Image (cartoon, protein in one colour):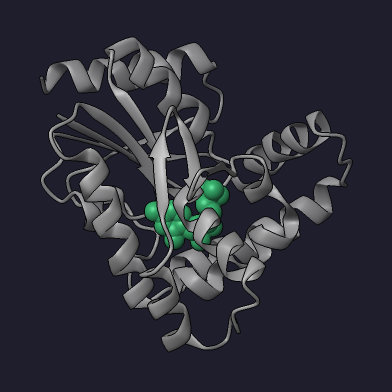
Length: 215
Ligand code: C5P
């Protein structure tokens, strides 16, 4: 069974998807981490990020894997290195290239094959897993999302104003929504969950119940 959780940055997808997976006894896949790892690998190899063809062929040659709830490049766990602002700002160069998306979508389907899994990202329900049994689109108001992101950054010692976080978030939303292929959108058969005013436990219960109804 596949449960997809899509939504904009800062909606809390990762932590919710993680908890939904553990409540259901499913595995969990963070597809943003795969885009981040591909971006990190390209930056490390000094690939010209404006050269779409080069990026597409490069992504076909790198060994990105997902195991133990972590993303790996060859034998290196890069789960922390992929979270820097430099990587975040550069992802769009790869995420905008249809051939790169095709490669990473293929990887996502391989990882999910034969498993009970909760996947989270932008395009999971609408494009990568159109036949998923349970599709959720998780969202919240821009201000709530920015505040949540601010708290996350503060936990890792980076203190930004809400205005700065909101400006970066608006830019990322625009990029995610306007992309030709793999743009952020709710699948027609997704259930939209707006978390404004909901406690994390309520969000968790809502999604777990949706999944159980479809088992
Ligand atoms: O979820 P996260 O913030 O880690 O995702 C990083 C970026 O990767 C997103 O802003 C988006 O541009 C891209 N992404 C994507 N498709 C996915 C997951 C992430 O294009 N399925």
